[in-house]
Image: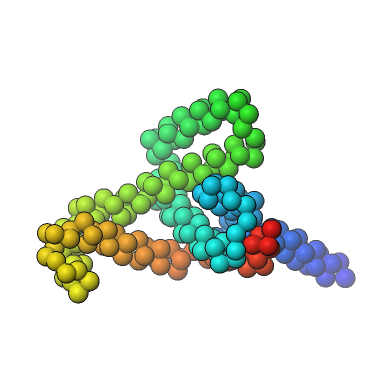
Length: 195
């Protein structure tokens, strides 16, 4: 009887904690509060949105979290430059906090900055720098997709590079989604859409 009660209690606690999250990425929860804070911040303070809009934003947010996971796995969060940049931002935020920023916003801002820098750094390494150095890859991408361009490569190089970057990013995200487990809580997302 004790084992059954313990199992029931564990399942209840797990479902309650999951119910407050919109998703779990590789065992790390994305709380409804964090998600809606990020959504409001990137949508000029808009508080409510239809389900489809929130679902699309959650997919983007999960992609962001996957890139951050990859950056951490690569050890980018351990670099001295990264640590120094974060320390400088923390000091600036602490000064700003005295001017009246709430604790909740402070924590979200700090986490957003930490993860944003990691996402930028990993994207720079895996996509942007790679494309700039990969002349052959750009040429091959153009040759394979020439039907999409009505002009010679020299005239549409910028467009081809942008498309090549997009292609590399899609492959990268596909690999990350295969590597890391993602669980989306549709019920919580539907609740948020009703608020």
